[in-house]
Length: 108
Figure 1 (tube, rainbow, N blue to C red):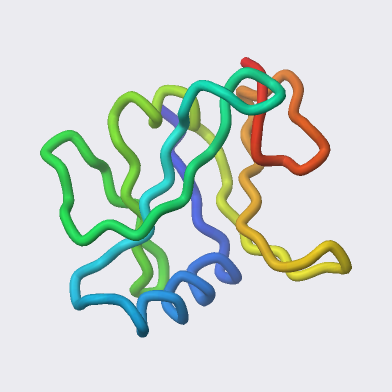
Figure 2 (figure 1 turned 180 degrees about the vertical axis):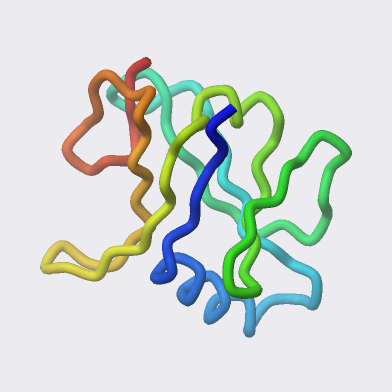
């Protein structure tokens, strides 16, 4: 597996968010069925690491990803963008063949 990468911007934003969460909480990124392109990313705060979770870390920030979601995200880069549309996490996924305009849903 090629793994998943967090950009420095994403790590910084995750660290900022976690300051207001319970100690030990992490950002969870998962892939769910749905969205306008077949699959969609979900972002949640989770205080409990599951047995099958992998943790992607950078600069003290961590992201939890479950084993099933990992197969759809292998090789992806998680970034944080702040542009005219607003602030959001953005996932560059090399496995996605198509995605919707908002970048939250994709097709494999």
